Length: 310
Ligand SMILES: [Zn+2]
Image (cartoon, rainbow, N blue to C red; front, side, top):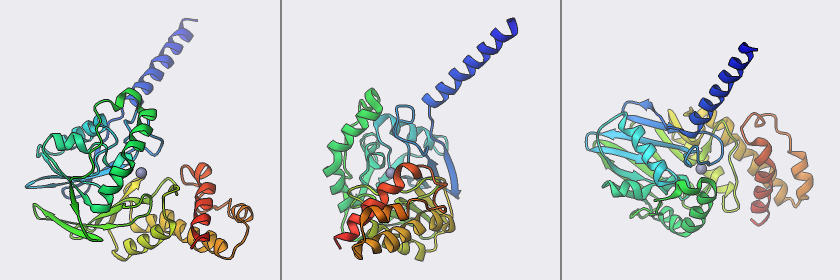
């Protein structure tokens, strides 16, 4: 009897520990190559436990300061990213470069700007941030509740014109280019000398990519081909673990091929929507990806609508 009570107690304590571990998600930097780091967030939904850090971030340590790529979804999330960076270097964050306008890409901008960082993005990225700010703040409040306190949406203040732009700091070169895949104005950050690609929400691995009402499958399809042509050695995807081009090809590139070449083609041929979705409901090569059951059908449906009107 005694033993059983003790066991129950141990189980309860273990359960509590697991809970508090979850409640205290701390992002951790992992080295990609010398001075280039990725911070890989959990694959699941935004939550108070993860402070909306359910995406990937990255940073480059240069002699002139740190370049942070994407700033998290809230003030508290940004603070956690800053703590992960501080474990690697005591250099300040000089630049924040945003790859997109979705909440977790930029709602932490204000935190870093308050510490003296300059926030940089391509012009259409910044414009989309301003456009979606209110909607994303409301959405994050639903997920994070009180933990959104102190968060002020700050679209990138230094905007770069043109379809691509090159930045240099402390001997590092960053090339930004539009992908326009997940959100309009999404971009990647490519480090040509390092062979490292921060893809933003163009590449998803481990989980299936999401096609939202404002996403573009044909842009994603095109952008992925352009990414592959650069032959990156390492890809820090928008979501999922750091990967090579082969994995990105299998889990994102092939899926874009499928959406454009099968679903898109059926739409252009004016085949019926439901029959098309039924035909491709079961895709064994993508079924292992997290969120497949929740997103695959809706993804196909949105791809169909997009290609139907082309
Ligand atoms: Zn995302």
